[in-house]
Image (cartoon, rainbow, N blue to C red; front, side):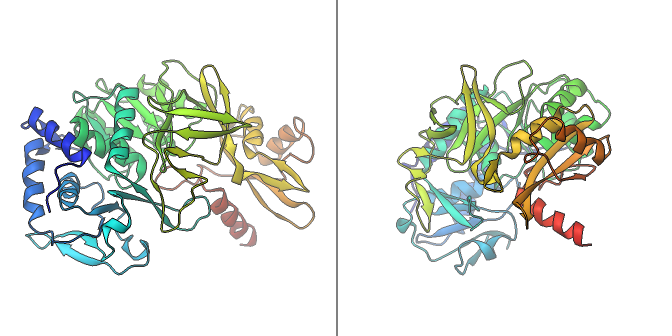
Length: 447
């Protein structure tokens, strides 16, 4: 079967018609790896290796220049596509996967015998959700296209730009900001997985990339390097974790480019974006993206968006996701200028029956001039149920920081321990897990 009615495939046909000979995928050295017509030809060749029938196709190519062609070939064959990091197939959904190889014997993707029609979806995003239990989010191609439209139109990204694609293309952020703009808007991309800060800096300079979507930890590490001229870089976007004012200011001082905060979710794509040219308060993520409507009630938001997913799979949760809306766990404050993130419901620390929002304690600690970064999490306490611990990057001893917080907070809110670290321990997506930090804290205490 060769689908022609799918919205992303229709957008791709227009892209390749409009700019067939233009570069689509670059290497980090600036060499052109694929033109748009190359991607189309590669897709046609790959399609010949795809067996008939329907199913779920798991693609584990990473940030590979063949990924766009594989996606197109699979959608034309009416497959439901899942992108995952290499080696993730064993934990997909507990279903045996069959490996499919290309003409040269290379592994293109793996697939199951699960009929695609039982999913009624063109794409699945893998997520741990709020419970930590792996599950998938079902999307139609129209919903993915709506997210791409919101990203490109809100951020002002077009075919004249060059995206630097070092963040994972398998994750929701990289897929929406790098892969979909290539297919649907003709925005070329640099394909690289070298996440060493010096390599990223060299790649940005050599390719002349104009747009750099990344995560706070990379902006922090790049700012610590000797400043290098990046005359073509015009737009930096940070998502995946809160962007601190210190990191944003440091990067701007080094490279002269503001880092814009982008707030989104795997379930609904982009939610808010700070498009302003000025420095903004801690946690501010701007007004809603184009096409997105927010309903704010008692510090919680309900996102109404044409990009909101069909639902979860294999078990749905209609109260949270479905019918064009999504309710995240984030706590927010709304002003005329936009949304400020204030933490998450699940992050609250239960101290002797009273709830502490760790973001409030973090804000107090950041007022100390020696504190560069901090994150607060709760650990069990035999006396109070839980107690707060602060993991801090600072040029001051823990005793000084404990006294600083104690002088500014009620006794029950003040941290009982300061955990000094040279850098906040984040994953490759730049995200902090308070649960993982609590586990590491106990390992350190017991060692």
